[in-house]
Length: 460
Ligand SMILES: Cc1cc2nc3c(=O)[nH]c(=O)nc-3n(C[C@H](O)[C@H](O)[C@H](O)COP(=O)(O)OP(=O)(O)OC[C@H]3O[C@@H](n4cnc5c(N)ncnc54)[C@H](O)[C@@H]3O)c2cc1C
Image (cartoon, rainbow, N blue to C red; front, side):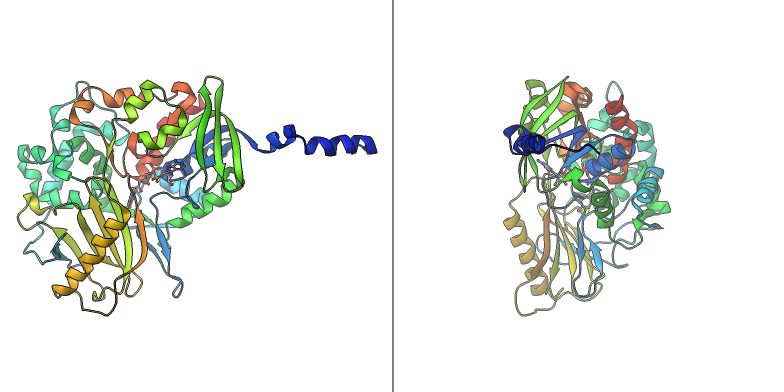
C-alpha cells in the first residue's frame, strides 16, 4: 500500500468534499438502465447480471414484482397470492426459478371451490346458469390458434393481417359457433381484457394462447410455498443496491447513440444515471413515458394505447361462508358474460374469513370508487342471503390497482401495421422495450419473449 503525506491527505480530503466528488457520488454508471421492476424488468436485470453486464433497475414502488401481490397473514404466517398465481411449465420459468432458488410444483387449476355460485357481477343476485363443458369447444379454439403459432412468441402477425384476427371477438365467435361453449372459460382466464366481446380477436388469442390451452390440460407451474413474492424477494437480494426502489425517472438529459443519461428521484435524493443502453419495462402509456424525452415517432405510437382497469383485493368481515366461491355472469347477456365494470370473481383463500375479490372495467376507474363498489357488492350479497349479515363494514385487508392493465390499439391501427412500427422502435435511440404491451399479460410468456427476442437484440 502507498503511504500518503499529510499534504496529499489534505488534498484528498478537500477533493472528497468538492462539487466534483459530490457529482461522482451521485452518478450511477452502468451498461443497462432498466425502468420498471415487474415481471419483465426484474427478469431482464437478473439475466443481464448473469451475462456479465452491469445494470441499474429503477422501480417506482417500494418492492419489486409489479402485478404480483402476496399477502402474509401476521397470525398464521400463511401466504395468499391475490395477483399473479400461475406460471407455464416452460424451461425459461424453471431455469429462472432454479437461479433464484425458488421451488415449484405442477398443479391443475381448481378454479376455487368445486361448485361455485353464479352471481350477477353488479347486483349479486343468483343467476340460473350452468357452465357448459368447454372441452370440445376448446379443441376448436386451439385449431384456430394453431394457424398463428408465431403469436406465442410476440406480435408477429401474418402479412396481410387475416380478418379473423381483427374481428371483435364476439363476431369471431358468431363466425365459429363451435367455439361458443369455451367462451366463458376463455373470459375467466382472460380477466382484465375489459370489453371482451368487443376486443379484436388478436388480443384474446394473445391472452389465451396455445400454451394456456395446453397447461389447462396438463397443469400449471406454481411456487411450492404458494408465495410468488419469493421470486422477487430473491431477485431483490441478488440485485442489492442495483435496484433503486421507490424511485422514478424525472427527466432525460439525452438518449441517443452515445448512450442515455437520466435524472432519477430516489428516497436518498436525486441521482444521475448514465448507461450505454436503456430498457423500458413499464406500461408504455404516454403519461408513463413522458419523462423520457420522446420524439414524435415514439409519442405517436405510445399515444395510441388504450387501457382497461383491473383491481384485486382481500376482504375480511364479509359474512361469507367458508370455502365460498362465485363467478360473475350476466342473466341476459351474450354467452352469459357479466357486465363490466363489475366484480369478476369471489374466492375463499387459505386464510379463514379472508376472501379474494377481483374487479374489472373496460377503462380506468378511481381506486376509491372501486373500493366502494366492492364494499357495496358485499352488502348486496348479505341482503340477498348469500352472505350472513354481520355487524360492521367489510374490511379491506388489501386493495391493489393493476391499472393501466391491458394496453390495446384499435382494429384500424392493427391493420395499418401498428405492431410492425412498434417493434421497429427496438434499439431506436439506444432504447429497447419489453413488458405486456409488447407481448402479452403473462409472466412466463414475457420471460420467454425477453430472453429470446429482446435481450439478444439489446446485447448485439
Ligand atoms: C390480478 C392479476 C393476476 C394475474 N395473474 C397472472 C398469472 O397467474 N400468471 C401470469 O403469468 N400472469 C398473470 N398476470 C399478468 C402478469 O402479471 C403480467 O403479464 C406481468 O406482470 C406483466 O409484466 P410487466 O413486466 O409487463 O409489467 P408489471 O409486472 O406490471 O411491471 C411493471 C413495473 O413497472 C413499475 N412502474 C410503472 N411505472 C413506473 C415508472 N414510471 N417508473 C418506475 N417504475 C414504474 C410498476 O410498479 C411495476 O413494478 C396477472 C395480472 C394481474 C393484474
